[in-house]
Image (cartoon, rainbow, N blue to C red):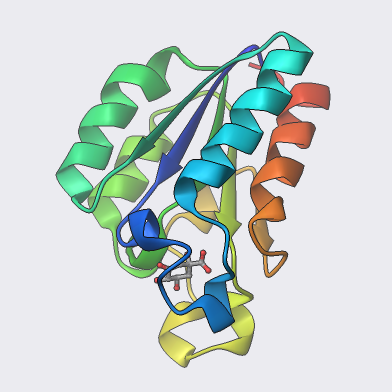
Length: 146
Ligand code: DQA
């Protein structure tokens, strides 16, 4: 079981709840982080969330907290599709990485169909709304090996 988990949210995810709710739903980022924190606490795991609209800030966070965690949940936002420095930062980690997308990116525009993060991730959840984050956390709590 992963005991120290980080959740990383990329660009524009701070606008969840107001951003294209017909695609991303009404749940806010604060609500997602609170649900994840409650579930982790109930399981006795430490969980830290971080959001940035800047790729370099996400890379810095991975060098810092990601390095010492034993499970990573990341929604890279649009960086999914072209963020190579983010991908390289994730590739350094030994911990399992779950890539989460709120929407089903494969039913959307062609540019969303490829992920530069997927080849360095353990697995991916897409299209299950904000609960995809909770499902990723369940997997890390039950299966995730550091
Ligand atoms: C997203 C899908 C991406 O294509 C998009 O750029 C996002 C959100 C999702 O959660 O569905 O910002 O990662």
